[in-house]
Length: 516
Image 1: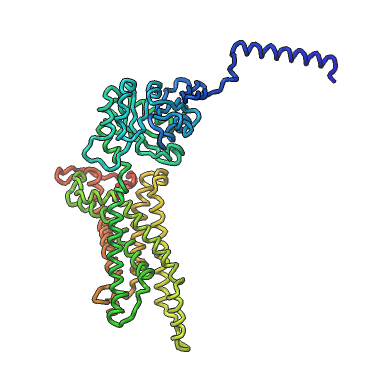
Image 2 (image 1 turned 135 degrees about the horizontal axis):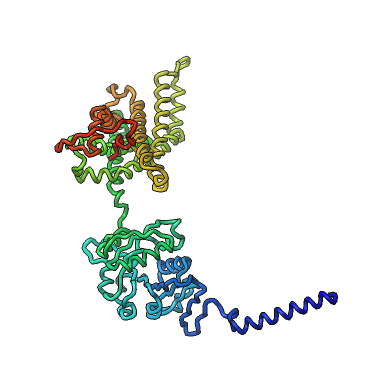
């Protein structure tokens, strides 16, 4: 029970609260009972977004189409604070697939409500939108379509859409990102969105929308660039085609060469079947051969480019097309080399696990005479040095591979990147070459190693790496290095421009970088 004073206070507060609720009902009748999003009637009519669901002043974004990309795009736009209206041929069936904050209605109503419209239908169905031409006149159309195959002749899908809707401003974009990227957000996928349009104002509006969604717009110019943008998602590893073919070709060559020497030769000459070596041993001898040759191919074009500049006496002459393409594929060549080196290490660790290896080991113990010393200092030292240098070479290759990742490369400056890729890369090539030399040891002078009159595999493998290393040493000669630095700072032999290089203390250290 309340005392008299407390009961009086309680009645006053209750009376004040009742008056406040009556005032609220007069000002906002039925406001609290009204839902944020109106439901549909039985006929499947549209629902209108309330202003409270999006930021004030945000344009209404329309989406024509109800596929996977449309649903992911709607989710991303709603999360970015936009009012989204989706046009569908069957709104009642498609409504459950979209977020509650998006309005799903007919295509005509969506086109009339939206300020900017995403055309997310297949290009072969663009003609079904002709009835919307008066409604879409003067509005921005964003074409997100891609073709089924690479189109080299044109016209692009965006250009055909622009011809179909001449009174609208067509912008090509959002076709290079997937529905998964849109749904998960830019943190888990590519952040760049390529855009092009003949209307700069429309392109600017779409750029602002991209930034608000968390992406980075990239201006690709006029709508004539849309053909290139549409072809980009259809290419299958264009920069990897030559490196992968080169790796496979080298693997086939060295595998066949090792098969002839190590498997076929004993069978032909002594009727000894050693075909069991083909899955493991022959592959394990082939992989390091491919890895070393591929690594040499990474640094050989830089040496060729340096000697071409010395021969021409200028840096302003263009390299031949074959050398230019070779220079742009060095990253892929290096990663293929790293893959082969890692596989070689794994195969080597698995060698003692084979039953054939255990059988050979037991047989060798049985054939050992009592009191015979099996310890040979030369072989022990060779194996110790061989393994140690190989581990160091693999470690340096791992560092080069990690540094080539964009997420890592963006955290270091150009001089640090050049030091790792050029200086440490040459160290990795030197270590891998020394690893092969230690494997060969004195076998190159053993006539028994020349089976079928074919030299050992490591002799063929060493030709290219030694050529690259000798070329690097030649470029390090003081007179040659000085002339190369002059050329890369603008000196030309034909124009007889004279200047002196800055002192070593004043140089920024980039003149010595030869990874052109």
